[in-house]
Length: 405
Image 1 (cartoon, rainbow, N blue to C red):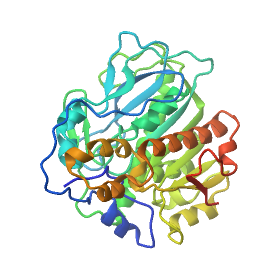
Image 2 (cartoon, rainbow, N blue to C red; image 1 turned 90 degrees about the vertical axis):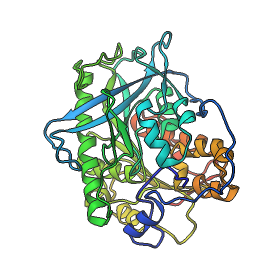
Image 3 (cartoon, rainbow, N blue to C red; image 1 turned 120 degrees about the horizontal axis):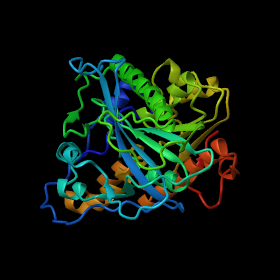
């Protein structure tokens, strides 16, 4: 079976939340035709970031001693991995980070159908441990939460571009919700959610994710103050102390990650701006809105198929708000699968129709370019007070973006 990256809770299309999640977002997939797979060598290519900054990155192992693991109670503390992407002062002598940590590759490949040898050799543009570029007052900060089952690296193409334009981006693995997470000791923790993903379980997942994000925000304050919250006290990149502008923190997420952004925005004033990429909003906090800016960006689900949770949010949202739609996009367009699966289509035996169901009809590189442009424009406007002309009205350079409201 070939699976697109799990996004779990898709926007509702005149269906119940649970039906939508189970039918189209929790790992159901189109089967590849039974054809002989072609042999390919080398990793997949990620589109280069468009910003002027060199990229550094570091993984951190964080332990929340105030919580037992909610999905594996035998674990006495909640452990998560995060990846910090940042503008680098220099990358000389620092190796590129892999797209996925090596120990996680076998399980990922089994679940999502991409050949292990190619995933293992796929590199990012970030250099491990490179020194952080200095900036008076620090860099604005963005957090990213993936869809249900998604790993922290599944929107690397968006995270890298934002970091190359001067943001620090922190991507989060929600352990035992994520398909797989490798820890520094080589241990790989895989998804451990209950088999019956009913509304009650999804609501619990949403609460756990929100607690994870608030914990990560606490750890960013420790990093900025010069402390090392990594569980193994592994060396941190030079210049990380004082690099975070914690008065300018935003968040974006895909699918359930977008719902997580909305929920934390409502509950935690440390977040100043948020974006939901094509996610149904789960729980009272997610639909309650806030007095700070929030962007809704949806796939091309067609007229008359609005998500009722988005309407509830819209009525509650007191701060700046905008809803956009990306023409030719599907739910899977908003993560790295949009560029990986087209490269793998021949070796997986995917038909053009199957590929379009997974990544949409909009050309993949163009889809990425449009998403990057609008994410950056939103956060530039609301965290940097730069001209937000793309947020005001349709733009001839981006005819694929429809202003819904």
